[in-house]
Length: 152
Image 1 (spheres, helix red, strand yellow):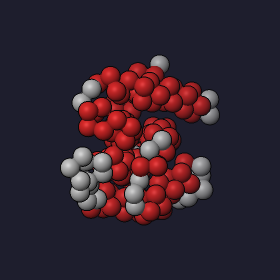
Image 2 (cartoon, rainbow, N blue to C red; image 1 turned 90 degrees about the vertical axis):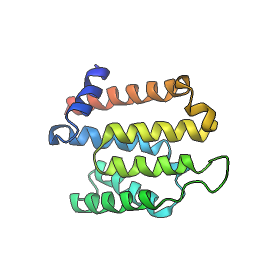
Image 3 (cartoon, helix red, strand yellow; image 1 turned 135 degrees about the vertical axis):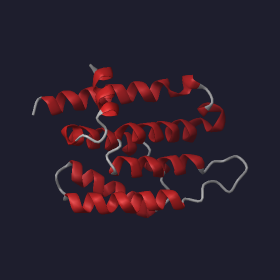
Image 4 (spheres, one colour; image 1 turned 30 degrees about the vertical axis):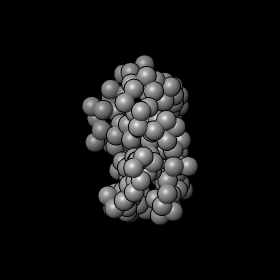
């Protein structure tokens, strides 16, 4: 079932039918890399997504946070060092921006990259095996959320 739901998220990325599931899944993925965020403003945007998913924020707040998060991600300076340690923070920021925009698949991709880069650096992101654990977690999480949304 998970692959079918994941495919549905990709195929119907702009569909409102899957909005609650997309936002809940994207939030869970991004929450895993919250610790990599360097800008408190991006963290505040993520908090608005959390509130929206819980029904504690309105659509206007979500839309405003989405615009702000994308602007912040686009302004991130990245890494100033030769080892590129800032790349995990950049990817985490783009994960938040995509999550707020309802682009769940892209948010999951950026979050996975940030998690792997943050744990193992450049060498890890070049090895597809480094992503297996994160992708397995994502599939398990998506299945759990899809089942919960279907039960509503």
